[in-house]
View 1 (cartoon, rainbow, N blue to C red):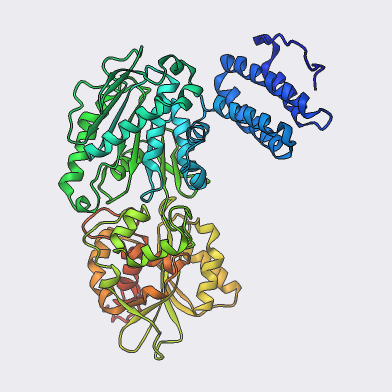
View 2: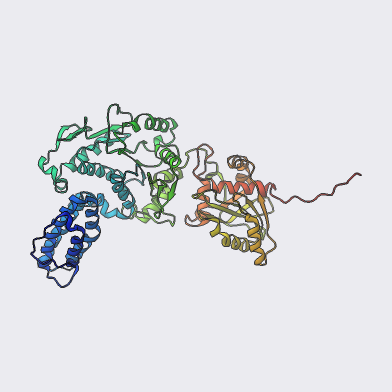
Length: 582
C-alpha cells in the first residue's frame, strides 16, 4: 500500500494513476489495522477518487467499483458495530448509485431498492444472461442483436422497459422505438418508463435529471414524448403497435420488439407471422438512425415461423450461432448476435425459477398443458402446431414389455452432421408378430469421439446383432467399431454401413406408416426428460411434416430403422450362384 495518510489532501489528477489509488484505498478498507472511523474517512475519499476516475474511464471505474468495492463495503456492514453500520450502509448505497450509471444490473437494483416487490433480486440467476446481454449491447458496437425468450411472468418485458429508461440516462439524446401487438401493452411500457425517469432514484443516478425536479418532459404524450433539452428530431420514445405507422420515426439507441404475437390464438396463423416478418424486413429495420442502433427481440417462441425464430435463422446465416458456457445462451461467431432461450423446466426436470414457478406448480403445468402450448410457451422450444404425425397420440406405446421378445436387439446409428445435432442410436427388440419395441437409446449432443465406448457398451449390454450406420463422416466408423468389438471378443454383431442416397425428409415421409404401425415406444408416463430415451422421444414427438424442424435426428434414425431393418434394405446381400456360359 502507498504512504497515503489519513487526512492527506490527495491531488487527484489524471496522471496520478487513479486505478492505483483506488486499489490502495481498497486495501485500507480491508485491513484490520484501521479503526471503523478511519475507514469511513477512506470511504469518503474513495468516492472522490471514483468520480474523477469516471471522468477518465467511466466503464473501468464502474467495473472496479462493482466487483471490488461493493463486496468490501458489504462486509464492513456485516461486521461493523451498531454505531458505524448505518454509515457504511450509506456508502454502500452511494456506490451502487455510482455503478448504476454504467452497469445495468446495478441500475435495476437501485431503482428497485425501496420497492416492496422486487423482480431482479428474486430472479437474478435465471435473468442474469439477459441482464448481462443488455448491459453489453449498450456499449459493445459489435453486438447488434439480442433475441430473448422466457416463460410468462419471468420479467423479460420489465427488463426491456428498465433498459429503455437507463438508455436515456446514458445519453439524453438517445431515441427508442418500442413495438408490440397491443396498444395497451406499448402504452403501459411507455407510462412505466416515464415514471422511472421522473423518479428521485433516477435523478440520484443521473444528476442531470435533478434539474427537472421530477418533470423532465418537454413534449408529453402517452406513446411519444421528448425529454427537455434533448437533441432528437421528434421524440425520445416512440411506442407503436405492430399495425401502427412508424413512417418518419427514427431510433438511435434501440428498436425493441416485445410480444409481437397475440398468444395462442395467433400461433397457427401463417399470414400473421409472415406479415410481421415482412414488416421487419421492409419497414422496421429501416427505422434505425445510424449503425449504433440495436435490435432487441423479446417474447415467446410460438412457432418455427414467428419473428423471433425467423430472425434467429437469419442471424445464423450471417454468422454461425454457437453454444456458450450457459446452456440457454448462444452467441454468433462474429459476436453480433446473442440468443437467450430459458425453459420453465430444465433437462433434469427441475424448475429454472422457483420464485415464479415452484417445482410442484411447474410439474402441474407440464402435466395439464397441451404439448404444443407447453413446448412453445413454457419451454421456449417452438414446434409446429400441425403435421406432428409422431406426436404421442399418434404412435403406439407400451407400459410393460411383452414376454415374447427376442433375446437379441437391433439398432441404427445416425451420426451428428453439425455441432448442435444429436448422435442418435435407437435400439429395438422385436416379437413374433412383426412389432419392434424401443428399449434403449443413445441421444446426445456430443462428438463421435466421446461416444465410441458408450456405443460399444450398448451393443454388448443389449446384445445388438445388427447395427446399421449412416455414413456421414470421413473416417470409417464401421471399421473402428468392429475393431473395438473384436478387441472385446465380440463377433456376433453385424455392422452395415449405409450410404444415404435420398434426402432424410423423404426417408422420414416414406417410412412414417411403418413407424406408426410396427414400432412401439415407451408410454409417456415411463419417459424421463433427462435421459437419452426421454430426449429422443421429445425430439421425435415434436417433428412436423408441415413446418421446418430445427432438429430431426430422432425421426431420421427411427425411420432409418424402419427402412433398413424392418423392410430389410440394410441386410447384407447374399451371394448367388450363376451359370457361366462359355
